[in-house]
Image (cartoon, rainbow, N blue to C red; front, side, top):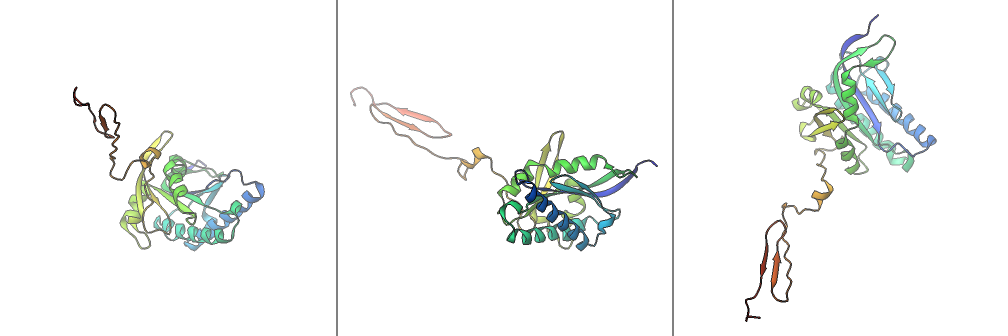
Length: 244
């Protein structure tokens, strides 16, 4: 039997800073994340046994059953993931605390009877999951924030923007994901926060004043005065002969 093409929702999660924890701690992290994912899927009214789950090493990719409402992947599923991880982190040690990036997309994938799921939607999902903007948003968020969600433009258009119950469109920020050969708009969200993730400020820009312009005057006296204004002109006034 040939692989069948079907429209499916795909989800992926990846643990932040998973390297360097050691096997014992990483095994515990994977165990907790897998259980949390199963529980959150079930709590969202989705049959976990009907899902196709792939182990990514430091995360998981899930292909949801046909006919699943995409809105349920954002609410309550993402909300449940965040709540459960936050509860775990309250009592976990530094090496077993879990913060994750979550990516959501949907599209036509090939379902091979032998098991593998393939197709461009999985490539898009991988780029969303690994996006620098998602990594930065989670790194800059308070430690109490256990997750950042990044959804594709397609997923956002069919779910978030409509403001279905439990989903606040204003809590999402539009970003550009540019990873390898992929470049497209996406949307970021910090579960549990009403406001959208703040924009990352480049290191150089962080040193600029809020108004985007600063004034700096340097006076050097001797045989005259030199006035230098940053981002502006430099004026040199020298005394006329006989006026020294």
